[in-house]
Image (cartoon, rainbow, N blue to C red; front, side):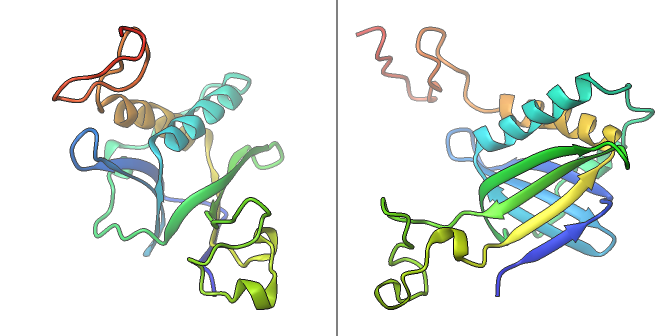
Length: 182
């Protein structure tokens, strides 16, 4: 059975990066009371979630307050429940909340069938990835929480390796082989 969390409200929704630039592990975390769920993601996924939320917030009134900085700290231990795959984002006008849906990544081959890495006999079952019981986290954020997440995600993403001014790829501490400078 897969992980499933459904939060109508959260105390915190945050992103963090653990490790050194170039080898960082990015984690999303949602908390409500004693319940915490952590999801491994990619740097670009965290940035894309923040970008989308910010675009929605532009069309809404300014948030009344921002959560305190402690709400944006990663709660440890932070063992990921799954690796992030599809992301769904939206806005619930009736409740003035931003919807964030995070689904588990399920590896498939080119025909859309599960790869051998899954614990399913692919030849016998012929199950498509869409039919698989994926891990799923659904949560609603206030405008204040969404704005704080965006600002925090920008800082976490920017704290990595600086981009090359010619190609945009990250520059490693030991140098960079720029394809545009060869």
